Structure formats: structure tokens, C-alpha cells
Image 1 (cartoon, rainbow, N blue to C red):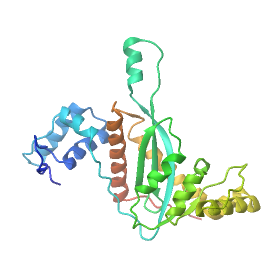
Image 2 (image 1 turned 120 degrees about the vertical axis):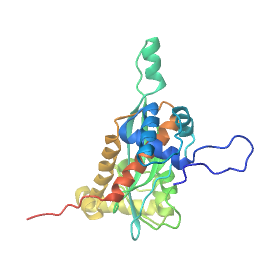
Image 3 (image 1 turned 180 degrees about the vertical axis):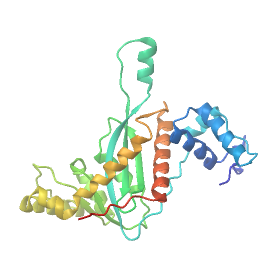
Image 4 (image 1 turned 90 degrees about the vertical axis):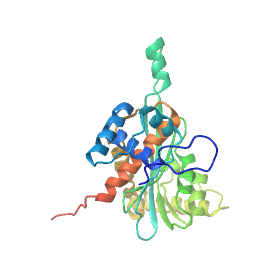
Length: 276
């Protein structure tokens, strides 16, 4: 890691600390649930333990840099095609509405953020993540999640629930030459087969009506989507609510959670073996 920032070559004051240094400090903050001031003291004590005379960013620097931080989310990747599992969930945020209600009175408004993630089925690593307000639906964010997958990465399949059964989602999956494992709605009608995504979706409608929804889910492996729900639970194990108040800082906080979980996953994951 390069702790000090490199010269940008532009006019004005240069950054003292690199993005990696800021992310390392904020990682400890998120992992142990520390305030910014305690994070600064904790990092300083760690550097003294390893006998490094590096300076430590103060709490105001961490707060300022968190807003524009480009978080690096490491991953190993799987061998062969990527099978992506997609889901979303809501998380409580300490927002402006709740603070104003506490200070000035009036009704207490709850502020939620929505987390959209794509998980590698084999390695259980988070490969794509987006953060939106609670008013944004699930389906509109699927193309943005797929855009985070490198173009040279072969995409085998995309598994999601029925909320993603839209034309844009099927067309975005078909554009990546991937197979969509999305259960059609109960009252699903045939679409006009003018795109590759619509044709694939019509085949899913025919199969689910002919075989039945339960057998269709077993044959397509739809049950694998439970792994992304487990990963969502892991995200919330790092805290049931966000500590940042600004939206951009909340995005960075959630991305840091994803980086922490990918680091834990790289160490090792349990393997379940049926006995008897």
C-alpha cells in the first residue's frame, strides 16, 4: 500500500494521503463500528504497534475524503462463466428527516437506502453493487449492475426474482449473451418476439406453464438465489443502519462493507457436505 498520495500534477494543494490509506482507515471504522475520532486514535495506535512513523489522517480529513472516495472492492473471480445472483434490500439511514424531527419536533420520518448487489454464485463474492433511495425499484438497476461486470468477463446466467421480469432486464441480460433465470409472473402474457430477450422470456413462460412453477424452478436452479439473500444478511451483520448522513458518504460506507465481506470470503468459506 502507498500511504502517501502521489502528486496529481495539477495546481493547488496536493492530497496528503492516498485513497488506499483513507479506505484502510474507513474499513476499520466500519468493521468495528467506531466514530471518526476513535478511528483516528485506533489507527494511530496500530501504526505505533508495528513501529511505523506514518502520520494519521484526522477525523475531518476522513469525513471529507469519504464523500468522493473511489472504493476498491477486491475479488478473486471464478473459473469459467460468471453466474450472477441479483437481489436488493433496504437499510436504515440516520437521515436529515429524523434529526430535524428530534430537534424541532413534528412527525418522525424514516429514511431508508436501498442496496442492489450481484453475487458470484461460485465464490460468493460481491461483483456489483449500487445504492439508491428507497423510491427506486429493483428492475431499473439491473442494467447498471451488469455494466459493472467487465465486458471481457463471460456471463453465464443472471438469476433474480420476479420483480426483474421486465423487458429492459431481459434485453440487458440477452445483450451480454447470458441466460436469464427469472420466474415469470403468475398472469404473464407472451411478449412480441422482437428482441432476443423477449424470445427467451417467452420460452420461460411456456416452460413454467407446461411444467409448473415448482418443477421449472427445480430444473432451472432458481433455488440458488438464496445465496444472495444470505449475503444480504451478512451486509447487515456489519450494522443494521448507516452512520453517514450524506448520500455520497453512505454509498462509500456500503461499498466498504462489500470490500470487507469479499476479504472475509477470500480467506475461506464453509463447505456443506450431506451426511447419511
